[in-house]
Amino acid sequence: MSMLFIFVVGAVVALIRRRLVAGPAARQDSPARLLGWAVGLLATQRGDWGQAMIGELDRLEGRAQRWRFALGCVVAAAVMPPWGRAVAALGALTAVAAGGAGLYAYIHVHYRLHVDGWTWVGTAVLLLVLAGYVLGGSVLLRRPGVAGPGLLGGLVTAAAWLAAGGFTFDRWLNSIGRHWWLVFLTPVLVGAGGAWWGGNAAAGRRVARMAAVTAALGVYLYGLLAVAVVGATGHDPSDGWTPTQIVDDNLGNQAVFYLVALPLVTATMGWAAAAATATLRGAPAAPTGPAAASTAGVATHRTWYVVLLCAALSTSAMLVAVAFLRS
Image: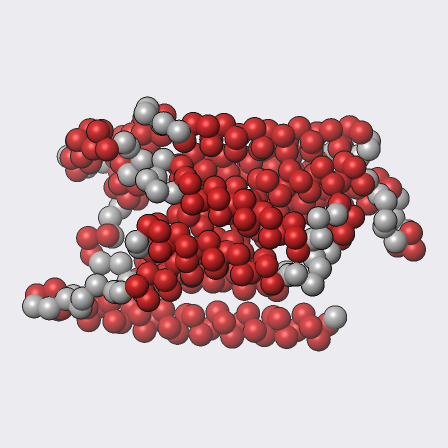
């Protein structure tokens, strides 16, 4: 849990940094940013339509009107053809997510797990998470140059997590073996490779996120299959748990580790590797003239970012130390 906290803090700090060092032109209101993101999903031949939507939004003044218009444009951009070869990849992601939901229901019925109100709440949350992964994957697949490297990176990431678990159901359910370093090395290679292939950090970040979506859905399906096959086998009987409790605990662990931990590690480390690779390849020249005057505010924001980063890292180190002392 301490490691997860560190990755969460890292992701939050990175997002805050992007916000603090963003130029004035990038600080638009939420409907404008949402619409700008949706326009990026459109095919090249529909670029004029996207610019027309942005111009129409600029003429709207009421906040409610701007939100309604932006959300309508997002829906139109998400479903508007052409999709091309991305349809096959999206169909595969949808099939894997649906297979995971089906196995989840089968395990509940086959092992006669306890069902109450919280079970239905957890099921609804799980379905929303799986649907979110499919929706996020559909958006990333429409970005140019993301589908191929992202899907390949997802397969490599899934293979790394399976290799760290030993490729055996029982060991994969309970621990990660001595090849744990693969779990951290692979996202770095995926993010760096995506940035090198795409030529910038943004491409590398998208490839890392696509790899995280693909690997999370694939390994989660594998983990559910392991629970369905293994059941309560191999558990220490001295714990006093019933077979039903063991299966229920293993079932919950799959979602925590493979729908939360795996994509968090992959996306965070891939994001950092993409940024580092883009920096090593060469940064743009420093602004001169009137543009240099705006860098003073950016420098102030960066100072606050450094302070925030140091505080976050200190807190993370303290939590890790406390966890080791308690263990």
